Image 1: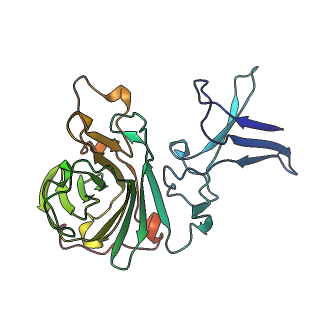
Image 2 (image 1 turned 90 degrees about the horizontal axis):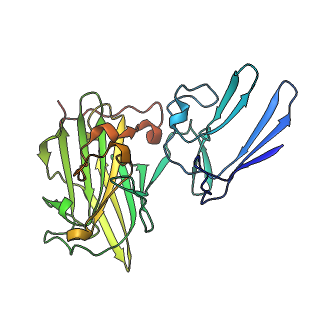
Image 3 (image 1 turned 180 degrees about the vertical axis):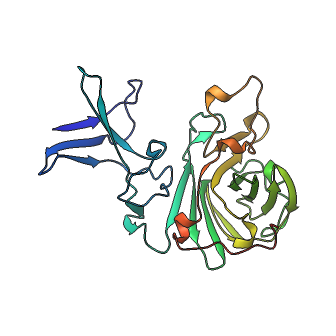
Length: 292
């Protein structure tokens, strides 16, 4: 038997190739086969591939329910694609030393779908830190900051910028990295929302090619607070009433209060993230002199 999931929960047609679920006879039970697009969002669970993982429904998953109408009892089976990472049409086992994570910013801060090609952020392993790559449309609004490219620029958040935040959810310590298509950057260290270090050096290069820009930064390990377990990323462009704030993990519509504006420091909306997803399970974060 073959089934195709062609609608959202509220009967709207999906905008992508549908998920296909096939049920076949097996020697000791029912064989369930899944064919689906791989969205790579959210990143992989921390559990071991091939093992049960409680809370799997919070990740990328395909589910099947088998229900007895008479007894009202049912079986729920959840399957996750994360036995492998998929990068550039290649597969890598979770046991590999390093991998790559890719995120797409597809919503504004208040959970409205963006109407343009989404910003893409990739995280990769570097020799002395985490490599952050940005691929984005270039809106050229506002105009470039007055600061020198390749140098920190205070107030960069008022310009066209892509940002990533790395959080220890227990201590509320977090790192904020801002990258601008014109080459300026800004690194901030914060604890509980209070900034105690600003303008750290960063190896960062950006180039603009017509209507797109690309940037690559190497974020030193010493900038990361110990125990990073959550992350969020943002993109900002535009001026005046056209100023647009986008978020990887936006605030749900039902949580938005009357008159509320964008606030990138709402740590409760950050989602799970581990540097070990990139560096490997045996990797240990180097100690930092900046976080004491």
